[in-house]
Length: 180
Image (cartoon, rainbow, N blue to C red):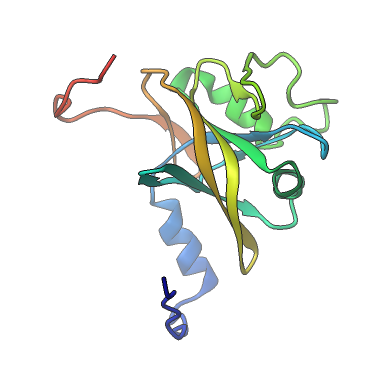
């Protein structure tokens, strides 16, 4: 299948205008983990999305020069844990906020383990994946993963908006009931 490669249109604003605009986009808070020959790493990540249900595929965007990106590329597995609102402190730990006081970000963190896959954060909704593809895009790497295992927490998600953690408040009842 051919890939459409349109010519890049020059950005008409400032870098700061772009960053300000992105701060107004609410995102779920996720922790991406990996484990294998290249070591165990984890980081809080806001750029996560589904790609396809057939086959189940997700993507994450990782800073290309980060330890997590290097480890995911080498280990060829990663897990995305979508944190519920009560795990805000886990998001802070994996963001690096406490790195000067911690030897290992995983210390004291409840993990769910899956054979041959990276661990997920206990209590979170989990998408355990094998790496499908990595695409370099400027400062970041887009990593797509084939989902091998899913755990659904059925808890309200932790959100991030304007550099602050927050909660989801529904304004209408769910359209469809969750499957068991």
